[in-house]
Length: 400
Image (cartoon, rainbow, N blue to C red; front, side):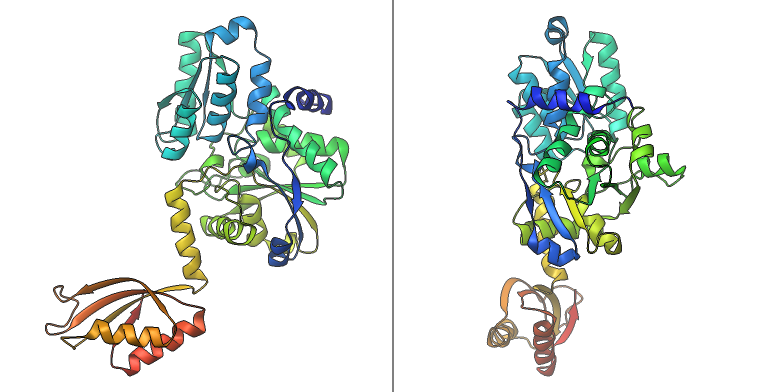
């Protein structure tokens, strides 16, 4: 192994004064949802809302005075960027971060607010990496690689040491996988401390890069995903052999699984995570038989979700639970249709949230009305009751 337990323990001692020791706590409601005994490691409570502070700081602490003076560069979709920016600023090290142009604005702004210079380049981490490597050559900067660096990997592994200490009898640890820095560091720590603990990775099905690497697969890689933090095309030279040896399997999840997981964390656990941070729970929802009845540890690896994305996921989650419904209604009535509909819905204890009322467009009768109505409801039975009553009143209804 290129990384040892001693490396991880050394990193843990060094970063302890500057990085929050997040708690690992039971999650009874998620346990009921999944049929497993679930424990959560709250890395979304770090100052930058991500575990990335651990590896970034340990790397920065290793630099010589001359390297610090010249500065550092990295490429990142957001969380590693913020971690490097924060600790480089604290250590008075100039930092440049190259980010894909698709990076959410919330992560770009946060990185700049921590004091780094941000350059937007290309559509992927691979594109950003090319630009970062050119800056290393042109300006003699030191690369702080997000995952393929011994010190970064060792720093990320400190997370597992804390989980093992807090909940020593975890049976399965599910870890989000991008380039593999987190899962590689944690796997080394777990293998050295608890040889009977199983490590399972999880990736977006659009970016199965590590799955391909360790399974000799040829699944296509690329596309837009909610889990942009682990949307990595190329796995690490150092991380791949560690994963091949110590990771038992990698579960692939789609964006529907990630949506459900983000929504469940928000509404059931009352904590906010981004797509990559929700990947562990997404794996449990996608493949429940792998985890049912087991004691499972999940890492909330990041909480930097775009607020607009979170709002969309929340509304879609309410729609899936039949707590919001949208109907398109048409009627030949010329007057008072909206008043009458409102009375009927109110009598059935529905709450109208939004109305679009039109007599001008071609989908409405020439002497009638087209109404799009969004209603807060209790469940599917409640929706069916409202629909039944409105149909009986002569309205043509289409559920959107």
